[in-house]
Figure 1 (tube, rainbow, N blue to C red):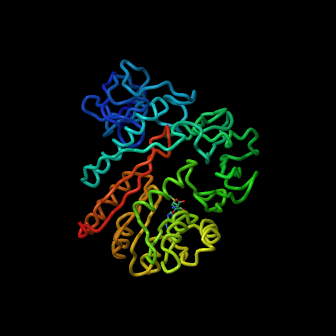
Figure 2: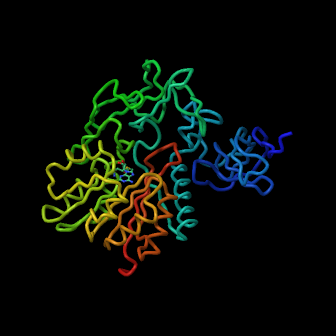
Figure 3: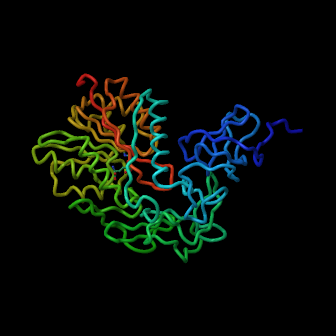
Length: 397
Ligand SMILES: C[S@@+](CC[C@H](N)C(=O)[O-])C[C@H]1O[C@@H](n2cnc3c(N)ncnc32)[C@H](O)[C@@H]1O
């Protein structure tokens, strides 16, 4: 006889839904146990069906499968593939864009409170388009029934004839090459297109041109570039507004990708200033070299950020440090090394508010306080939100 805990998957209950939580779901309680419920809104009463968890689980996951009362902000999902058990790409198709931004603001607020002990008022700003047709990079999965997108927390593929949040130029590839599992479709701000099959280019350009303000950036098809058409511009504006780079200053741009921020930092600090760009991926560094070629004040370090800082390759001091790490955040060792450069301003661009909050807490222990936090809805219909934080030495207060 197997004595393991009894699975609760498939069980149903009627629950009252509380607040939103990080990850695209809301919180409800069932006999005192937390249940993370998707496809619902705070204040609704719904019938839930458990999708993950057993009698010993600390929390359960569930889908709202029937609405018994609805809350303001609910709308008909534009995409027919959204809903329980369907495509996992979007979390908030059933929510109006304005209410989505309120939910994202509540999530950032909660992460800052819980992980950094800070009370921060967060207003998430809209960036057009704020609903559909924005995603300029889509990773399609090829399943037994055709090309589609993965279901939530599953390897199973939801075949789709169209992704509603995708930019019209990255339509579902109609004829995937035989044996291919993943297709990446990309369109740039200049209309350049590329299609990669399992990481290899099969159509379009190897390098795309993106335009931000008056500058052109070369980006390899598979390399990192923000996915919302106005994201790069929006983030550059936020970084320059919060970072205030001035002529003659020394700036460090960590996790710099193809040099998006370095180019504009370089322009601001001028030929008597200096920017150190640090990036770990070889293809991005190749693109960055081209993108900063007319700015000799920008020096490039091709190395993991941890190693570059430990070896002193970003220098001894900085007036300004900009960092834009992956979802895991910078983590304590890197944060300590940044603080050791004694910058007057740290601008932290973050795609995960939880990682940001943890790193803000580390900065606080090193004498840096959160001076300002901006947040942008750069991934409409999803639970993702981009934050730009300014940290300054507490001694400056
Ligand atoms: C979120 S992207 C930001 C890129 C750039 N700031 C932009 O906005 O286009 C993060 C970048 O960090 C790089 N990266 C990730 N981990 C790294 C590490 N440990 N050291 C150096 N670079 C890293 C990735 O290759 C990627 O280019």
